[in-house]
Image (cartoon, rainbow, N blue to C red; front, side, top):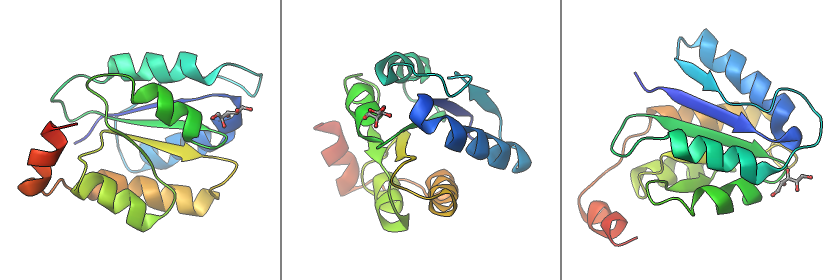
Length: 141
Ligand code: RB5
């Protein structure tokens, strides 16, 4: 079972709460690092916090949500052990796991609707890394 760590800024707060409920219903172990309400906060604080919690070579995955998914993505990818993917549909989500072995997904709550976001979360959780030539490439990142 993959442990899921969640974090968002104010722009992603509502969607984070929806995703949390969805994951708990699916019996996933969830750690929510905030933010705790819709008051304005700075997305880098939450992306750094989550990225530091994701351990190297573990089965943990992270979900970061902001307005666009872009800021969270930029911050998370500054961390050595993080491969964060901006997931905006099923195909991008699937490929981020199969080819890039992404361990963090970032979502844009203002650009991706709730149903698509939940679909992406399910796909991210169940799709495996294909390894092989993709492992060689991931090692070069
Ligand atoms: C906050 O207004 C917004 O800038 C943030 O949620 C995110 O979209 C940044 O990339």
